[in-house]
Amino acid sequence: MLTYHKVMSLLKNNSIRRKVPNQQSDSTTDFIGFGNLPNQIHRKLAKRGFELTLMVVGESGLGKTTLINSLFQRDLHSQQHLSNAAPEQLYSSIKIEPSTIDIEECGVKVRLTIINTPGYGDSINCTDNYKSILNYIDNQFELYFDAESGLNRRSISDNRVHCLFYFISSLARGLKPLDIECMKALHHKVNIIPIIAKADALTSDELIQMKQNIIEQIHGHHIQIYQIPDCDADEDEELKEKNIQLKSCLPFAIISSTQCFEAKGKQIYGRIYPWGLIDIEDSNHSDFLKLRNMLIIHMQDLQQVTHEFHYENYRLEKLQLKKYDGPQRKLLQEKDNELRRMQDLLCKVQGQLAEKL
Ligand SMILES: Nc1nc2c(ncn2[C@@H]2O[C@H](COP(=O)(O)OP(=O)(O)O)[C@@H](O)[C@H]2O)c(=O)[nH]1
Ligand SMILES: [Mg+2]
Image 1: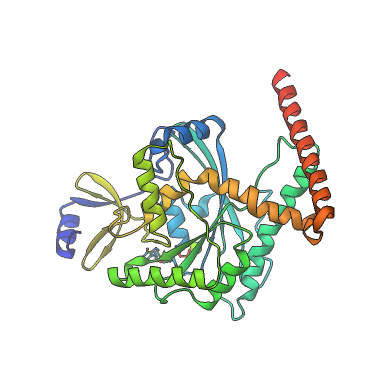
Image 2: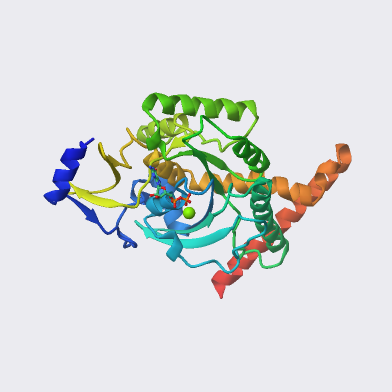
């Protein structure tokens, strides 16, 4: 790390220059890292494009907007709102604000919907806060359920929330009661990824202790966070190693910034302190890169778990299959599976017809 005096003298001599960050990239640049994707995943994504919805939840001022802007190098506030995922202010102080970001990089097209939740944790009674979030997630399941039950299943737009970054304050020693309550209310609905915000406030030892406290609380309260899957056995060794590192560093401890500097001929996103400059992508200081890698490598798995686990739970409850047991439930499930097979077939035939026309 550079010392404060060194940074200041470099700033003076223009060796470190504040830069205006790029708001857009062209499709060949690789700042998010799609170019580093394993071949198999890259091929799949490049072929069919991808839609992912990511929700960010945490108290005001923890750096949610900054993280999103620095992860995707976009200005969240300048993005358009989605018409079919309208902003809502269902309860007291919390707002649910979806925006879309279209990313095209190295032949991969991703339509990312970011749902910000400003106002969370700001009111006296915060119970309403996670009810709004829960309602929003359920509403998206409901819309998907209705669309899936309709005839035109090929053009269903999937606005279900695939991933939720839950921000934990580094000023606490672990999870606060609101964090625990909220995570418990949401863990069967969405893939939760816990994030220690503003990790620069912690020393290395404090950070290790904080991560340990959070993991113990998560286990103690039987909270199910997103389980990063193992790599396939035939995946290359480098990716397997990367994945082991990802799994071991949960919860991700993040330092983020949208300030860009040019230092030693390199463009660095960082934060300047009286004692020096931190490069947010330096894994000695921040899990920022690991978080981004996790999101990219496991994008498909996040979608799959949402569909096969969270949405399926919702669907079974909706169809009230859960209240039956024994042979009655088996029979209903067989009928339900048959109906799904017919719907899949219909979807396939619609696809073939569309190709012929
Ligand atoms: N020290 C530190 N400050 C940060 C970090 N990330 C964001 N901030 C600052 O925290 C303040 C609030 O950030 P913002 O992204 O608006 O928080 P939000 O209310 O959660 O969206 C801003 O002044 C950011 O520059 C970080 O990792 N460390
Ligand atoms: Mg914000």
